[in-house]
Image 1 (cartoon, protein in one colour):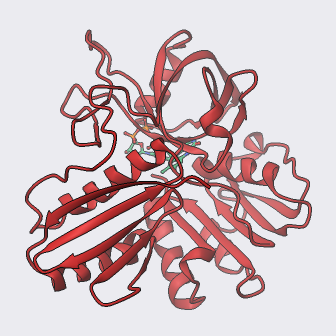
Image 2 (tube, rainbow, N blue to C red):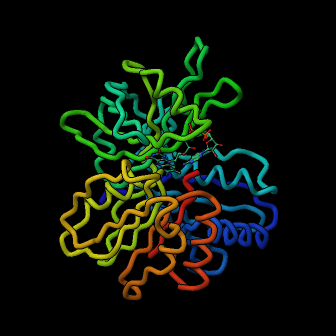
Length: 339
Ligand SMILES: Cc1cc2nc3c(=O)[nH]c(=O)nc-3n(C[C@H](O)[C@H](O)[C@H](O)COP(=O)(O)OP(=O)(O)OC[C@H]3O[C@@H](n4cnc5c(N)ncnc54)[C@H](O)[C@@H]3O)c2cc1C
């Protein structure tokens, strides 16, 4: 397997505080962190990893990933964490190809080919373009869309440092996270199911029938079918596209339960899966709450993946449950606030 690597050195000031900072971030943000030797840290995400070697008040950091898109994302991720550590004052310069001035390798244009109602609660957006990047490793992305009235579209560009200059400021494009509900790379088509809710710039835009408009897809960033034999999946309306996609990808030998929230019976969709995972829809106001139901799910220890996505408050409660009640290891859980 190809592994691309890029290296940087930064002044970190206080090594003990730097180590404590990474431990805290790993705990909060659910990425793996090990200390293979004194003065060394290794952080792991689904896209790649970072090896950190402390040398007095400095750190040498090497990031690795399987392709240039992943490598650029890894550089950006580590740079983002470094930027939030008070004692790192300068932005890192990464070794290797910087692609300065080019579009980021993990940014893809697509066109809105169709916008229709999937049911009274979801818009189904059909995008066309090169969808090959979305056929493996990740189903989530950020959808970049220009703000109304912007005459000079602003898109991200590679900086001279090897990371991406994402547009910022009041004119910066909208960039909410969504899920590739269905991808047909041969036909160059992706479906995105957008839950309709109050105060949503994306939903207002969907209602404006933006067929023919260009959007930018940054990703895929994360999220794929967990490999454990038992899957316990639970999510609210915004996570329904991800859960249905995982059910479609699940292997025949996988089993478990999927809890999906629907505002009422009209949002209930047909579930297609070759697996033995049992899907249960929870109708708001009629059935038990998502968190309550998800907390009762149990599977064989070490062979079960617990997956949860919903509002911030629900995700916080579930994370506490996964960690404190079930004592789950990071690699056996995914718990995300989708809004
Ligand atoms: C990894 C990931 C994948 C996601 N995939 C999908 C997907 O496939 N489909 C999908 O519909 N959503 C998905 N979401 C959720 C989506 O990103 C959020 O709902 C986001 O807020 C939508 O942006 P917006 O344009 O509506 O505006 P924002 O400016 O983000 O939100 C506007 C207002 O709406 C509120 N809001 C957001 N979501 C809800 C909600 N569900 N119910 C009530 N109020 C809400 C916000 O709190 C805010 O007050 C995903 C989120 C993540 C992190």
